[in-house]
Length: 182
Image: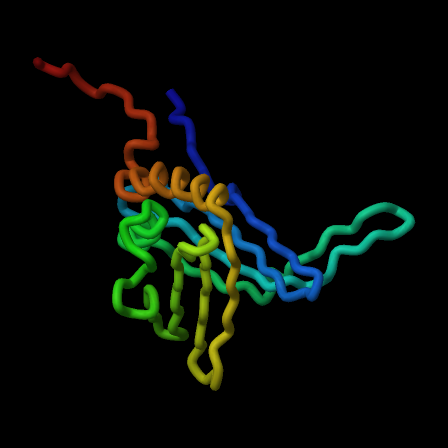
């Protein structure tokens, strides 16, 4: 019997917030859940890209703004990163990272900062990614403001995804290989 494969690569949700000045950003969130317990690559990837072009209206109708995904910033969100984001989304903390400026990720080639906080005056959420690659003099920064409705949807996705990031084997179908004795 063939086991069905579950592959979430390429499936993502995006939020596109262009501005009339061309300073907008886009956000993409993609779950990466493995089928192999030996490969611990279970996470969400969060990507942000800067606005590339303005929306325009021409003879052929409306042309939407575009975003430059070649200049994106990507961060891998693991269990604790997702839990920190959910803490803010659920109103249990004003921002991620407590007294720090956010969540820090360091690897051999760069340092990345994730900032996420709720603005109690407007009810919106501010998400920023900043990366400083080794050898760069200044960090590359991108930010987006998300509405309460957008964050509610993201919260539901992250809450559900957190279970499967932690227990990916439960996504696979299992066949009984022996008898179970009660």
